[in-house]
Length: 142
Image 1 (cartoon, one colour):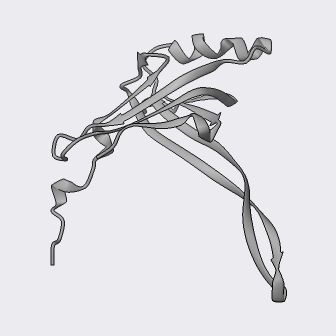
Image 2 (spheres, rainbow, N blue to C red):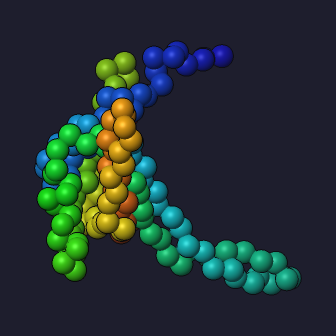
């Protein structure tokens, strides 16, 4: 029986996140979700099944605040202008054979962004995004 070794578990601490080609290496958390919408379908014999009728994508990016880059990029939202951007995320753990990278084009900001600060603690910024699942591409797979 083959059992994996601890160093084979991919560590997210070696990831890079880029927005429109600009590296946000200080990202502390990324969550990307593709959700499937289903509709009930009645089958012969009174059986019930489901059919996929749509898909949507959403995510959350958290980063340590180092500068005002996000603020500069997303101030257009307050004026009612949409901001589309490309998201590139790569996990490249030196203990693992290869890297994994995804690219999502034409993302948009879902809810603005938030800044969190507490005395004596690092500042965080959070950005919620939406995207069309068709725009999610694997650039590199392990």
